[in-house]
Amino acid sequence: MNLLTLAFKNLERRKLRTAFTIVGIALSSWVLVTLLGFNQGYKNALNRDIEGMGFQIVLTAKGCPYEAATLMLKGGTGLRYMPESLYPEIQNAPEVAQTTPMIMHAEFDPYKGENGGTTVFLGIDAATYPAMKPYFKFLSGGWFSAPNAREIVMGYEAAELEQREVGDAYLLPGSEQEFTVAGILQRTGTQDDGMIFLPLQTLQETFNKKGVLTMIGIRLKNDVNTADFEGQLYKIPDVQVVSMAQVRNTIVSLVTSAKIIVMSVAAIAFLIAVFGVLNTVLMSVFERYQEIGILKSMGALPKHIFMLIWTETVLLCASGSLAGIAFSYLFASVSERLIRAFLPFAPHGNLIELTPNLLIFSFLAITLTGIFGGLLPAIKAAKIRPLEAIRSENT
Amino acid sequence: MTLISAEHLSKIYRRGNEDVKALNDVSLQIERGETVAVVGPSGSGKTTFVNILGCLDNPTAGTLTVDGTAIFKDGNTLSEKKLTLIRRKLFGYVFQKFFLIPTLTVRENILLPSVFDADFAADDKRAAELAEMLGVAHRLNHLPAELSGGEMQRVAIARALIGKPQVLVADEPTGNLDSKRTEEIKELLLNLNKQERLTIIVVTHNLEFAKTADRILTISDGRIAE
Image 1 (cartoon, each protein chain N blue to C red):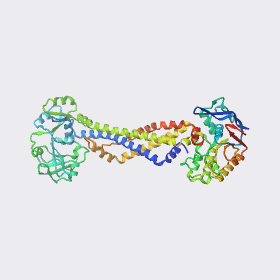
Image 2 (image 1 turned 45 degrees about the vertical axis):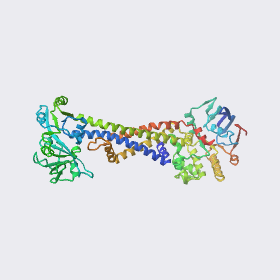
Image 3 (image 1 turned 135 degrees about the vertical axis):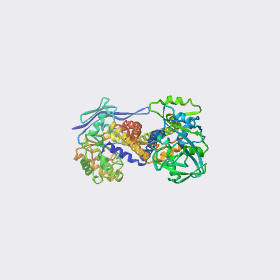
Image 4 (image 1 turned 180 degrees about the vertical axis):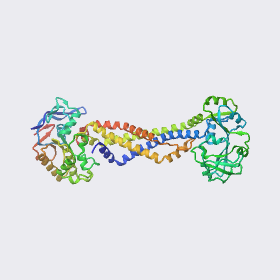
């Protein structure tokens, strides 16, 4: 038998109390791991979404930058338009490598889901848009047969939701015109998965938006300074220049306040767990006051008693921490759904990324904090004088 | 051969504004292998006396020498660490309460002192021998809750003896036991004294038990009234 076995057996004495303490630590560990995983996962998912857009700069009609960001990533209402005549000017600029014109339209579909919902359509130029999205692969079918074809290409999730296959008919909400599904894209893990694409010209004609665009995607040549080019674009009246870095910053600032609140809750949960450990171990020391005196009378030095109580704390914290990590793995999808419900904007893909480094960091952080919390009871126990302890009932 | 030598031991407690003399100028010598019974009315100072002899408590004045080592002399005391090492090497303690750890088996309880001493010679064989000698060999893998009071005290005695101490200090070891179990423990301690040449200092209220000792010390008002 050694100190570790003795510490383990001591914890077995009050099984329920030990279990509750471990559950307390596990819950705070779960929250901490999930939030750290979210912190990492959200940033990466956002970067994936933004990189998935395929362009460095987007030119939109002048408006609120938040709206522009939302518009680009999610689609939205109250869209603003700019004249299509701007496009050749941008396209022919010497700094530009590739451009693509787009028009976005959001329409309420009364048959979507149980209570209806808004469907976002993106009018694209099949000649230039795919070059911006080289990772696009078709699950079936292909792009439109003509620039004015009454055809749609559906993102993976949109096709799943609408239960459509290539060749199926699709009644375009708001127009009551029947379109044919020309192609269904493979899953990309970006916002494009939920999008329905139409030929640019078809969308303009169908929704009376001839001669206007919502945005122009721009990819610059390698040696061009992005900031300088943005400065040139700002000279064009009534346009908004949104760089991908701006989009990222805008969304991050939207989410930061939510993250601060959640992190505060996690910090409080963490503190409660530490005080829980402190309380449990301290109670256990007081309960075993006489017994510790007996251990000292049989030759235990203060360092032995300190190590014994400390080992008990370490066992509690380590097992609680491991249980919390296991919970965060098992319930990652549930946590993700909950987090998505609270966020102003949630990118596609995994929002919670649990990497080995993050798990090791969380395990060490919780265990070390718990060990720190266990110092006080361990020191108190080590200072117990054998005779005083034995006498406390045996006078 | 003298194992414990006490000269002019005094112990004064402070209770409120009053000094209480728990031990008043007590001197005695205990020989190796001797059995000493300490009797006296409650509050007479017998437990204080035995605690000082067993190096669990410090006297206020006087000199105590154990196995040639000066434990207390002229108001100076050994450090807590040295005292612990002396307790570990020379003494085994048995109390009225058994203080067995409920989640440890009898074997583990007996071997408990070995957890704190890397040089401890105690092993399973010694634990089994002691359990056999004390009549609890069939209980080695049982938990304390499954034992009778007498058996628990036997286990506590085995635990006190596992480190092969020279002195067994027993403070009312039969205080929680009925007369039959008291008789058993008494026989057991006498056998240990004979077989292992163990010096035994026992505090007891049981005069029949005390009469079996080599010497009876009656403590009254902090003095030996032999």
